[in-house]
Amino acid sequence: MRKFETWRITATFYSPVVMIDPPMLDGLASWALEREANQGAALNWIVPRHDRVSDGIRRLPEVIYVAASGLPWTTRMQFDGAASGLDSWKKRWRTRYSKHADFRGAKRRVNVKSEAFRSHNMPLPTLTIREGWWYVRGDGPRLLELLKDQVWGVGKKVSEGFGVVREWRLESANLVDYEILSLRPVPERLARVCGLTGRLRKCAWRPPYWDKRNVEECVV
Image 1 (cartoon, rainbow, N blue to C red):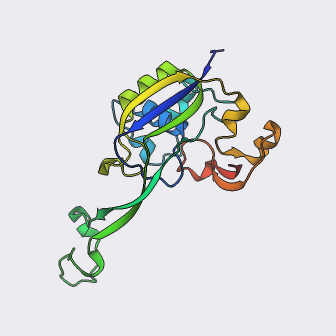
Image 2: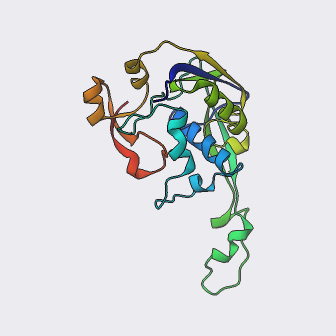
Image 3: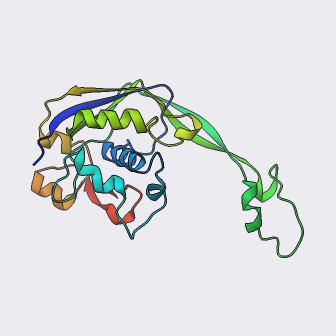
């Protein structure tokens, strides 16, 4: 069995981060492994494919300890000293979708300045964070290599310039398993075994986090 150690991985941010929940390191690592396996593409990760296990999910135990229950030994992103803000992004009608507009036989053009197809400024709540960090039991040097090569941003709307990472760093940590698991969602059925208590919330507890099959009542 591979011997993993406990590490702290830190991201220094270049721009404000947009997120609903703090990102999970196992999600980032799965994404990075998927991109690496597919020469920079991760379409099988973006498009739900329930008939196969993605390369990123299958290879996750190579870099992060995953228990027999499927629970990865890593935390959600930790941070402090965040300043809240509000930004926006322009949601535009894409002309390639024009064929899907149903005008009931009438000939009309899509007007992006008014009416139903107009562009919208979508609000984005932001957090200005200097650093975010994760604790993990795994192969730290390999994780650092993956993140540096494949993950250039964290959170939502990275393509719009939010959550861009300036630097990744790795250092050893001395957290025990209980402390790591207390900083992530753990299904209630597993939390009782681990002695974890806390607020209950229905959420995903392992990657891919968009998959509703991974949603359970969790201690968070």
